[in-house]
Image (cartoon, rainbow, N blue to C red):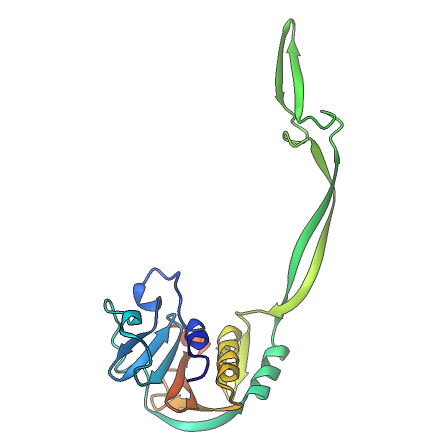
Length: 210
């Protein structure tokens, strides 16, 4: 399997509070990797035993459904759908500052009452010695809105998941995959079959958790 480690990283979630989503694991002749909303299944034991999760493994025997309808989709087709989806701007903010006139840049002011004096934090600049003069928003680039909805062959998916499918296909160096639907139409589960025993399961947007 080409680029195995890079592919598995696309599907796990090391920050998830559930341990079973931290690493790939071996079960019933397959290696699984999932973050809870998308799952990868690879045929055969391709991981060393020390990397296999031994506790809290979910039962994946019925995770991947029996499929019937099938459609071929290409990387180019998926990329076009992504670029046509809702985009958001990745921005950074820059600001310019001038010296605070109240404290003359020291960040401190003297408070006096009769013969009593006390140095205090400047209330105008909050002790920084500087006042924000202007602020500029810089647009670095436009990126995919991961929550955008992608419509594909009558089904709807989050853009984030379609992006993972595209990255997986590129890492496997393939240009096409088989899109397959669950026989149970109420489950809303769709399988992307990459061949050679490698497949991904995604739930449609209105049935988010797999």
